[in-house]
Length: 302
Image 1 (cartoon, one colour):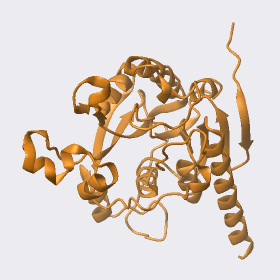
Image 2 (cartoon, helix red, strand yellow; image 1 turned 90 degrees about the horizontal axis):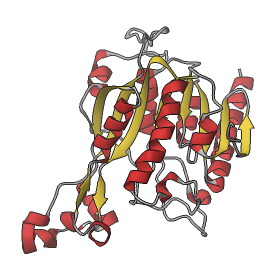
Image 3 (cartoon, one colour; image 1 turned 60 degrees about the vertical axis):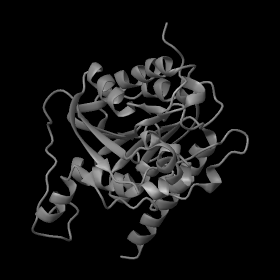
């Protein structure tokens, strides 16, 4: 018997489809080969608390259960993504807390993501490292390994900062619609000259602006919200520019407050997003509708 998919709310128009519900359940209803590109940032297990919802993947009883739930989603993502196209995953390695694991260290979250995508049938394509200022990380997290007093007490416990990564996976099969670029006309959206390509091709992206994110404060929920970190718009923009054409469909199973959808619409793509948390969903819908209205107003001026 097929499981009933519970969609708490949805908004569908010509520019985007935004669903409020469980990402695995809702993904099951999305047709095969619907997405030209997938971009998402998965829940960072145990690092943050996003909500108290039992369907929140991050509320798994342990890391093994988290990976089990995650694997169900990857099965759907592979089906939804067109052959030969790219799935981009934003992540970081995760601190292991002494109070929970008995020691201080790092969980190889990026490595586990690679392994799980390969097990789901994706081809590991490449990765880039997004540079983060360790001083900013130290001030924000008070991580023991980054504190200067640790160096003075016992530098064996010191560590370097934890960067972000974007892991790129390619779906099996041949890409039927090439993603093309040119280097002659800078006024066109497919303009990608050699100097810009060299920046994109770097294994370390040094120039991502961490302050360029969607405004999120009205998405906070005092009952269960402990954290929110919108994906940087610079990162999304670069991925979409490199790995999609205008008019194509991007899919994000962890839609959050709509960052991936915002950049998709701004860059003349279509978006499908899923978000479990009501306050994130409501803020995301509001943001995307405002952007669509702005685009319409601009068109009426000409």
